[in-house]
Length: 292
Image (cartoon, rainbow, N blue to C red):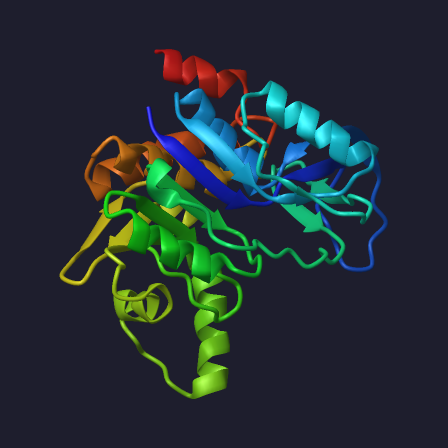
């Protein structure tokens, strides 16, 4: 299968199961479900690993016991962690507050600055996925596109207004609305068509801008048209990692030379399994689905 690089976070999630939905000013009881592997690096990366791809993770962790646990868990599950950077800052736990309906609220401390350094030789990679605000991601994605004509570069819409050169840009409708609102406040410009808005961030290499919208499915915008696919119905247990699973399905489909709509259909199926599973990283249910 394909050789894929992921520039994404590797997290230690502490899961707190609440007995009722969050309310401002309320008092909430919870059950501590312990820590688990999380972050886009694990959620997207393991889905691709289980689908048969070779996945190398580029991320940053500390040198403490929590970081050692993260590296051990990720490596045992098949992620190549040889490019992870280690710093001297204590690796924090992210608090995931889970409500009975499967929704989650994430509480995390500020992350230390993460700098990627010089770009590697991208001729050995079939694809790179960027889901990180690390310093240097723009240079890395630009280098990938320039060095390797055959490489697939996929990125998540950055939370800031920084550039993210890629062929496929992905975001959720809620994140896009927030991004556009922020851009309008800064520039005063509004009513830009979705693809043109995305092209101002991804550059001339952009081929598709994918916007997910929960139960309403997903839409891919291109320079000449738009294609939509429906969401796959699922009993929601835990929504954590659904977007990461969708991205993994799209990447796997495109690497297999499927069309954009076919790739989004794969992503929708993988996302449905993610929300129906009591975990953020793909588990036994996902592997059973792939084995069918």
